[in-house]
Length: 236
Ligand code: 2AL
Image (cartoon, rainbow, N blue to C red; front, side):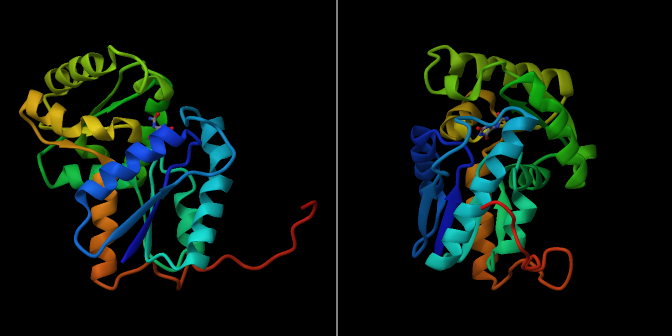
């Protein structure tokens, strides 16, 4: 089985980290390849970034189709381009926010999301509603660390830990969901420090895709997510 993990941003070091975290949880006989689009924003932390990265996400999935991948992960917490990717892929496509929130629902009565910037909170709330898990999402908390600084700021780990502690106390929640793919490598350490389950969407999504492929399940093509109609494009 081959799974393609698409990091929607263009920061190659983050793509490498995402690939490592995905491979760490994938089962025997599963090959995980992590890629990012050749052009686009270095991080996704606004509605503008979400729109600008989406064509790159879809293009990587289209290339993956030619290469014969069995399933795909969209590895950015806003799940940019997820539904379009489902329309063009023959295998299942799972976003890390959707996978993380659905996984958290198995583990406690409520969860808190700990994310990067305050400005992403509205979008996270909106997708929680879309996925039908708003009632379980007790709060969304920002660390105010820009995505690219997760890798360079020496105080980032301590700040994220402090915000997780505050989130659990304020929300009276039982599970933490990490709100950025760039936090994937902190999952195990945070869980040890906090004493509660911490869900990384990259791990949750790659194991979900693996499970769906193993079960022979794929996106339904009878309705809204059918292959998009072929049409003329002007100017390219
Ligand atoms: C993300 C993410 O997962 N990757 C990225 O570039 N931005 N999420 C976020 N909340 O900032």
